[in-house]
Image 1: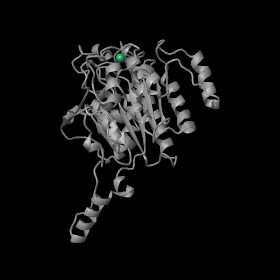
Image 2: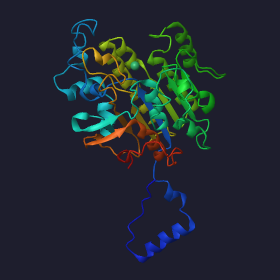
Image 3: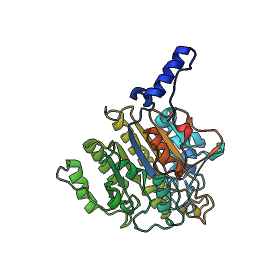
Image 4: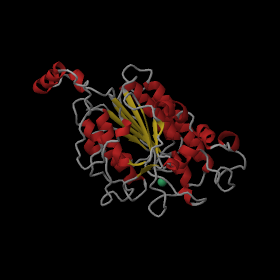
Length: 371
Ligand SMILES: [Zn+2]
């Protein structure tokens, strides 16, 4: 929580500073950050390679990975990486790249990694949400309540944020990762419908379609459900803290559908644009909301290994992160050499909100992310 005082050039200003320390710092001085709301978005298993380089030349026209040869080229292919990444993630490489920050382009030595050594989902989300790895206990993907406390739960215990924290996720393990039972953070995930007495027309239709359209597996649903449930909640409940976990990118990658993986990534970019534009058109959120986007793990890099992840895949612990908001410098693509970790986001989010993170063992603040 940096306090910025004018340079004490005169005795008078020195006196006024002594006065401030002696009699307490008035509120207007202690509020240095503009962020009042946080939206965290994750794309499951989305590789940094596509985020920064666009479609992979190894896979974009591989007959084993796409349904029809040549079918992706018009949408996703250009000889230049800079063009390709814009074709894949147009919002990220326009608005976010000009007004926010993107970490993880390893071509510049800008490294973001998991600090857990598992490199799959529960450990990844545990790390992002609690601020640290727990390889001893969180070394599985089972639907077991998380013994660790997430930043969402910590915020839900504060008077300012209680009842104003919500989560929406594709994967039905999220009620356990966030420990909905103990944290009392409402988590809508998997095949679960939205309930309540005041359902909107949109929610009623989404509930109906969720019963009619099967996801790729019993444990998840298509991202459009997660997205539109979250959008309805954003307009109706106005949460101060919203977490949205999209899952399709990982699921298409596992089944080896590179075409669907890219289409999903591009669709999620569109979802993120819709969220950002909604936030920036609402006085509760406009210029008072920081949006953070990241992933839970990386994947392999070979023609076959790209489908999978876990500690047997050398590069699967490589990730990325992005931020845009009123307290984040508009540095764009970060090109400085350095090492960042998924575990640094929880304390950074608290620092943006000017609250001390309750867990002293969590990762440090990402200093560059806060003005
Ligand atoms: Zn996976």
